[in-house]
Length: 333
Image (cartoon, rainbow, N blue to C red; front, side, top):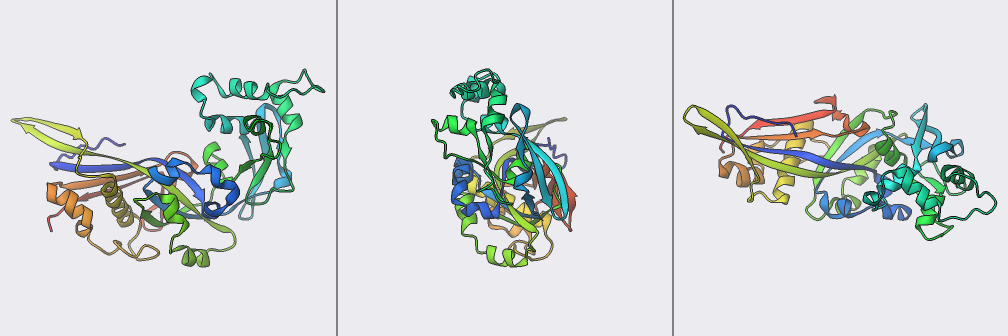
C-alpha cells in the first residue's frame, strides 16, 4: 500500500486490494473446474470486477512436453498467434499444500515422480520420465481448456490414471505472466457479503453483458480481497505525527461497500452495467455517511495496484494503467 500522509487532513480512511484471482466467466459453471475454487473465492473475497478482453484460445495439438516439466504451445489472441510456455510442476507445487516441507519445486517433483516404478525406463530422471509418460489429452482438450495426462497429478491422486490436469488460458497467463493480453477494460464493479463466487454465478448482468460481447471477446471476473487502515493526524505543539490504526467500527462489509463505491466513481462517469453510485455524490453513499463522515473522517484513498499481466487495466475515462487511485476529500452532508 502506498504510504499516504494527509498533510491537510485530520483523519483518512485508506483501502487497497491485497490479493486477486482472475477467472473466466464461463469457468464459473464448468463442472470439471470446480476444484479450482477454494475459500478465497467462496468466502474471503468480497469485491469483484468484471473485465472485458480478447479471448485467448488454445491450439491443443500445438502443445507438447519438453524438458524440466515445461509445456510449450501456441494460443490465439484475436487474430494473433502467440508462443507460450508453462511449468506444470511449479504450478502444482504452489497448490500442493506442502510447500513448507520441500526446499524447492524440483525436490517436490522428484519425490512425487519417484512413486512411479517405470520398469522399462529405470534410468530416466524425474523430468525425463514425466516427458515420456505424460502428454496432452487431445480427445478432451478444446480451445477453452487444456487437459493434461499428467503423471504428477496422477501420483498425487494415488495412481488414478483417469485424472487430468485441467488448465485454462487465463489461469496460465496469470500465473506465468504471458505477455499476450489485449487491453483489459473494466466494465463492472461489485461486492458481495456472502462470497463473490455465489454472487457472480447468479449475476443479473450476465445476460446483457453476454449479448454485447463479440465471439472473440471474453469477460474475466477478478475475485478481490481488501485491506484497510485509518490514518490520524496528531499535533503536539509544533510536532505533527501520523498514527495508523484499524477502525474496529468499520467492518468487512463496510470496507467492501466503501471500496466498491470508490472504484465505481473512479472508473465510470456514465451509467453502463453499473447503474447505481455512478452519478451519485460519493458522500451520499450510505456507508460513507454512516462509517466515515459520522466519525469525522476527512478523506478517502482507495488504491488498485495489481501485480502481473492482469494488473494493467482501466476504462476510456481514466486510461489503462498498472495503478489506479481514488483520492477524495469528504464534505459534510
